[in-house]
Length: 124
Image 1: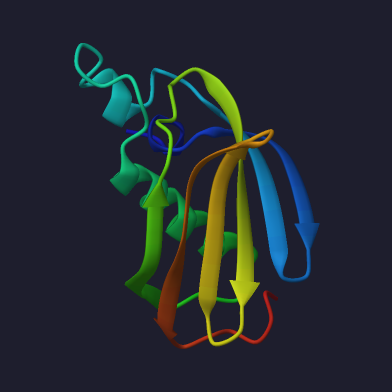
Image 2 (image 1 turned 180 degrees about the vertical axis):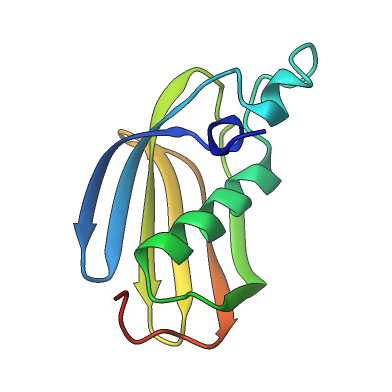
């Protein structure tokens, strides 16, 4: 198992101080999709949350924090494998991360997670 088995291919990153947008390609060969290729052709919701937590910890000062509350969660449209989509993460006050998976005007899912723990003040 490698990092590439579990995460999408990041093709572009647009970053601002409290927001990052990742352009990602979701290959059908991801471990969680390939195992269930005969029954699952869309990105599972739990995997979407795992990616939000993973990328929030990379791009924001949340190291040593845990995502312990899902405050809002909306699954609107299935995300099919083999697509290029965008994930926008917004770091809000008191360690809230708002996320949106989208493609153009189509919003696939969105929500807000709350993190708690030791926040690093810098990424150095």
